[in-house]
Image (cartoon, rainbow, N blue to C red):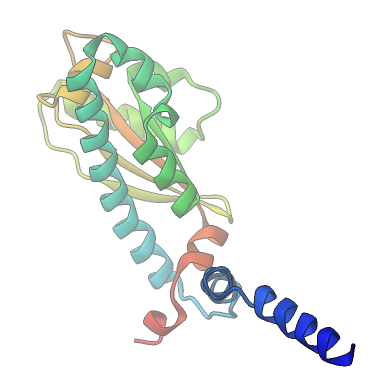
Length: 193
């Protein structure tokens, strides 16, 4: 009888230690531990990371939206207004903890935007009307948020499809980062360099 109980206990122990499930949990645990690790992040590192991620995310988002527009141009305005419908964009927002939006000329009066953002949007619109090149921009909004803006080229399919005014194509990416999410995502080993 004791042998049967011991065999049963060993069998239960072996069944409980399912190696594939354990490995998955171990990698999840490692990533969770890495994200809550205490890190010293300088302002320069924070700005650099947000700027680099902003460039990368804006490029990937534009390519994804362009691909969707080429597939189904009838859904163009709907996709431009709700980027969450694009799986790649939804994944980027989840991965980086960023809110991705496409702004147009009508957003100059958007009260949800910070006054600094509306002012910058006005400057981007002025540059677009005068056919001048405008670069990307990263700025702080209070103590906890950073916003990355990147104007789209007037000739791009995304700009033409998503613009409020077809005569004057204008669109700007708006990526809203929370500092806490940036710090959580940063690798402590890379920061020491």
